[in-house]
Length: 122
Image 1 (tube, rainbow, N blue to C red):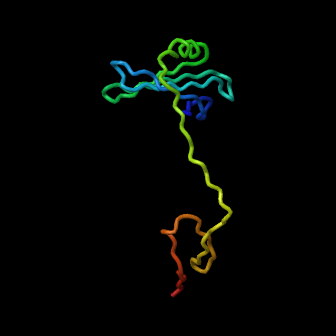
Image 2 (image 1 turned 180 degrees about the vertical axis):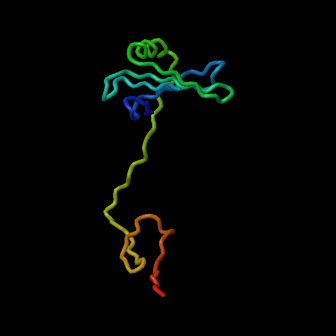
Image 3 (image 1 turned 30 degrees about the horizontal axis):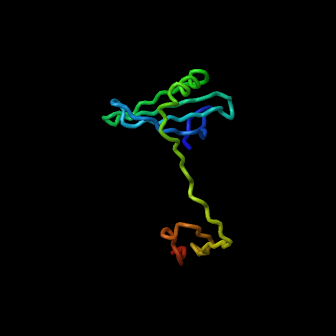
C-alpha cells in the first residue's frame, strides 16, 4: 500500500510496479479509486530516469480512470508493504527514578536519566 495526497492528507492507495522503458529505469503507479472525503479518483505516476531525476505525473477523476485502463497492461505486479505485527505483552514495565526529590517514570530513554541528583541551595 502506498499513499497519495488528497484533501490535505495522505490516503492509502494501491501501488503498482510498471515495466521500465529506455528513458525511465523505474516506474510506480499509485491509484486511489475513491477518496473518503471528496470521492475523487486520483492516479499518480512516479518515474525515475537514468540520471536519477524524479518525475511525477498526476491525474484526477475521468482522466485517471482512462489512464489506468489504458496502461493496465504495462503493470508488472502490485506492491504490498506489510507492517510488522505488534506483539502484545501483559507486562506494564516502567522504571521509577528520583530526580531532584520528585518521583518520575522512565519508559524508554534510559540513557538520559539522571539518578540520585539532589538540588543544592548553597
